[in-house]
Length: 381
Image (cartoon, rainbow, N blue to C red; front, side):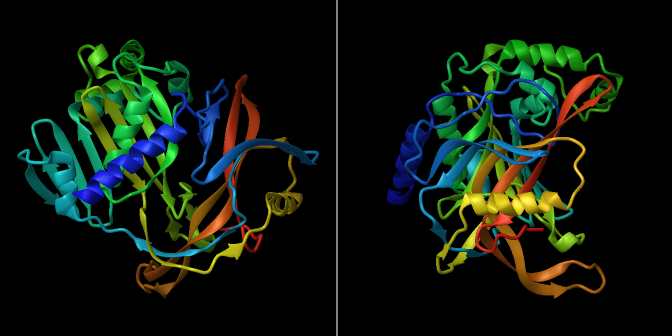
């Protein structure tokens, strides 16, 4: 009980330190250009500080970025393993003493109550949705730039952004996961949800999924349905873990990043989904001195000097993160999969790079993330 009280107090203090406004941050792989709103803490006394940085690396490679980096110049690598959740504790976290039936199929345990569905997989996947959570996901697409343009309201009536983040962070902590604050957050007001749903029902493909029962529509969106959609990076040893997945040494073996998405309404948590892999620390290595950002940018410049660039690239976000890497294991001769994996989280400079282009008369932006080992200066791939 004392540990639980301490955890609640800690989460509340972190939210108080980090959250000064409720707004949205856009980050997509392929999206149409539009204005964006960023949530940036006034102060980040826990680990990182935010600054802007501009530079011209070459004719086609420029930097105009927000930088999030720690106030220390050394960090240890971490020996980790993929987290396996205690299924009983997870069920209790979401359902408490509510009755829920259990169905098991293809390595997934599905718990169903009158108000929600919880899926837990043997590989560490968690997906929880209430009826409202399912309705929202049928309408709001976090990867859609059009949705980012629609859902721009900052504060929702009857539920503060700060309170919603606190609720989300607490339930993530209950699962034994440390969220990195602040999250990306999108405000879903009832008028915009209704407008988006009305637009979707004009699409034949969307209506097909409604007809076969794969997509559920709400009769009418009300203020009671208004919610915040949040995307949390996961934190370990004070650094966020990269949410990017990549192919290990250009193979078919994927190394997954980490993040958690949560939807909170006035009635509480409506959805939580673990996206990727949650890594659990086994051993902390000796801290190593990190290369400065300027040296990492030089490595980035050298990478693109080998590529003929027809369009201009702009580095928009720079951050120091932990990146999961495979350091050992054996290969299954039949499947080609790596078994008995040994993994580490290593500190890396992460560069989010935008390429603007025009297609069919419209401007689009493609975002690429390059991660440079913050100890060796080499690209992680």
